[in-house]
Length: 635
Ligand code: COA
Ligand code: AMP
Image (cartoon, rainbow, N blue to C red):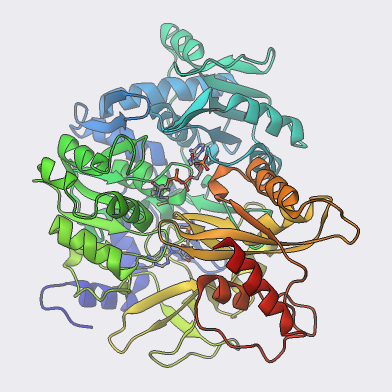
């Protein structure tokens, strides 16, 4: 892999030759309470731990040090909400004041170092104050995306056992106000362990009745703490202590609690801002995602603030709030230098404004680069964005588990030539192998599972929350010495990585990661359903959408349409609207192998209208004709 101007080959080689020196150097960009002497301890944790003897605080690095170093009056957060018709700029100085006081409120509520705090909030500045306030006092936050239903929230409450839940009265979607409090109340009722208290931020769109003895009003608590001049000091933690738990979909309905540490996370994210994103302190960075996802954690909150940038907190959509020019308006109005979003957002814009006419209304003079991740970036979308923006469009690949880029095109090091369909090259820290089912490395061009040689770099998960064994089983057991990404792909002769899709039951819907196994569990709980299969079917806008196939119990004498509608409602109710589960189809039988395994792969091919071959192991080939016929009726 060569590129005249890119420093990438030398930098990657520098890491490969001496990873410890590479990360020791990178760690100098962080202000440590006790700097690391040991960079990596291979005997600690499951596969080793980064910076095991260092002491630090993430909030201090993201906020305090910038105030100390002259950024007090620089905007830290620009909140822009077309749905709530609100805008607010918060300087680093103001952010520090807000975080100190909220952290003091949390302490008064009994939250101490190592306690968990669940944050179930919409995209408002208070949600960021909450994350940073937890970091300040060494509490471990777990943000739950607002589009999840009560049952999903309950599962997370059960697993994280939070001392306190922070929430708001509502979220604002373009077509409706989403009341959060009833969902929170139901979740707490469903959960085995209960939080001691909840702090509720009342938004003006909807006031929530508070539960006596449990709920406190956020604004009132903060105002009282301000009046009493309360302010929480930074609590230093071990670099290996958890900063947060973020639950992500696995193969079953029980999500995985991805743990992020403090030290490695800071080092990796700080390195990424300059070297991958090419963004300097003081510049404006916008990740159009949600704080409930990893992209939001890393690139709305922590990385831009660690780097001393201004971050945009956008509560809206790429289209319809009010039009497909929304992103261009935000970029122009706030001087955004780099935008990071999911390809689905650009597919939505392209669909509504194919000639990019709205773009002509705005001056994007300071805008340099568009970054895409979260799902495979189809070449058509990348080309459309390039031709419309006349700027580089960078696909990069990562996962909740890694927290930052596995493979990308490092703008800060100088761009490598773009190959459409490839997120380009592995970043320092990642030694990638393409393995066959028995763990043998494959040749260039051959498709296999993409695995990362251990240890994972700083910033990537050290384990799952209180589940070392599940971590080993899910990620390390398949290929000893490697972490499996559960993504399939290949490497070409120039070393470019191609990521083609998941090898497990995880699907990607509008950049949101969902478990088909989880949806099947919900469908199977319907009293009339004998068995079911959920597959991710190709979708022009969302990349994939889930379709459910249902076989009814014998003797069920109800119209199929009725059960189908109930099943669609059940998934929305139990998993949430974010699942985008809109289609359930009753069929007579599911296609299976002779040993009884459901042939989901071939069902997907039929639904996607791809070429497919009759699997040699199929029990009864006629079932596939029945599936085809059932789908033909729907299309
Ligand atoms: N709270 C409550 N409900 C939410 C929600 C939230 N925070 N976020 C989404 N939902 C709801 C939506 O209102 C929608 O409900 P509906 O079925 O009643 O219409 C449902 O969940 C599905 O949401 P979504 O998949 O986002 O679809 P959409 O039609 O609202 O928007 C896009 C489609 C492409 C415009 C949108 O997904 C998008 O902007 N994506 C790009 C950015 C991004 O989110 N990236 C994520 C990771 S980087
Ligand atoms: P999440 O954990 O929600 O970030 O989702 C991670 C998954 O999204 C990965 O395992 C991939 O399947 C997919 N993904 C993310 N980014 C890309 C990309 N740039 N190209 C292809 N797939 C991607």
